[in-house]
Length: 373
Ligand code: ZN
Ligand code: ZN
Ligand code: ZN
Image 1 (cartoon, rainbow, N blue to C red):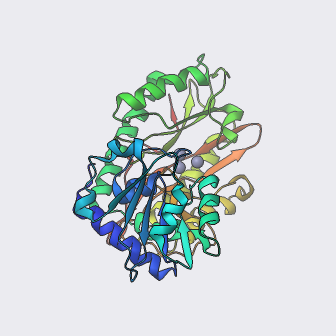
Image 2 (cartoon, protein in one colour):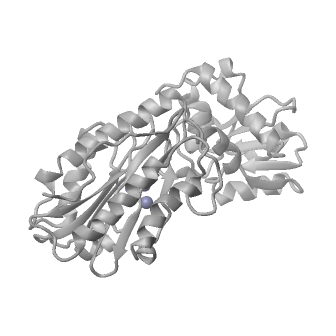
Image 3 (spheres, rainbow, N blue to C red):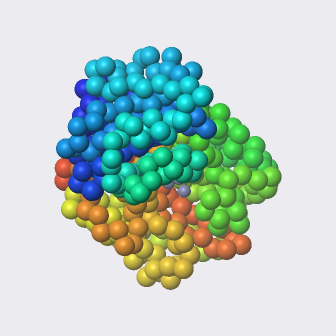
């Protein structure tokens, strides 16, 4: 999405208002998803300092984009004039942190983005001694976790794209193939279906499925294996997909697999049904956890129920015990409970949900039953 300048202007204004509400005088935003959100800049971070310097509402300093001179041509397409953002360039013989301190005046508390490299954090600290540093994550999360309709449309598009990849699992996930072979094909399919890259591909077969963040191995998939497939990536606009389905491959799984899977499916369904404005993040986690714990598998559900998603695959709001945040319209997050039986097998079901005016919309639509491929 080429984000319209008007929308960027609104985001900048709201960011400086939120900064003020959080008792922060100054936001310093280096390249990453926060900068992409605020200015539409896609450059990555490196040792030369690039940053947006944004004063909190009530301060007079205009926003500035500090950029190494050699990077300035890459900023030519940005609507900086329209946004009232001053472009401040520096050369390799300058001290860019001194530049920031000149622009900043005398703040008492600055917030730096969570992903800022330590070298920049310390560089700023040295040039702005006595200025308290805090994380900008909580400030910017206030904006980023509530998606506007264009952002929801991108997440919907991403979900449809990853659903199309899961729809092809019958041809890709076959007994006799290794996880790595299947994973390579899935990665190709992720790109073929409209993502710019496969950001992550988890194929956890048999005992490997019991490790939630297992990625790929040379294990050969056997008939009767239960396989966790958790995949996703960004669209060109930066918005991500993330969807897990668990499959049985080649033969009906043995023992009590199906019975335990039913528990997981009921838990995932209950959590999705609980999504509505006013519900707390932790209540969604509790809805899933209660069912799994009651069935005796609480100890085997080793992670939170979900995470926000947008320009980052993992962002606010986190669907986790202890998070009393009230859900509001536009929040987008995963609902992905899992049950992991050490050394045996595991299962997870993951959908992306968006909070609507009176409930929740599930963006992923593939069947959630344990399908035998
Ligand atoms: Zn994860
Ligand atoms: Zn996932
Ligand atoms: Zn996820």
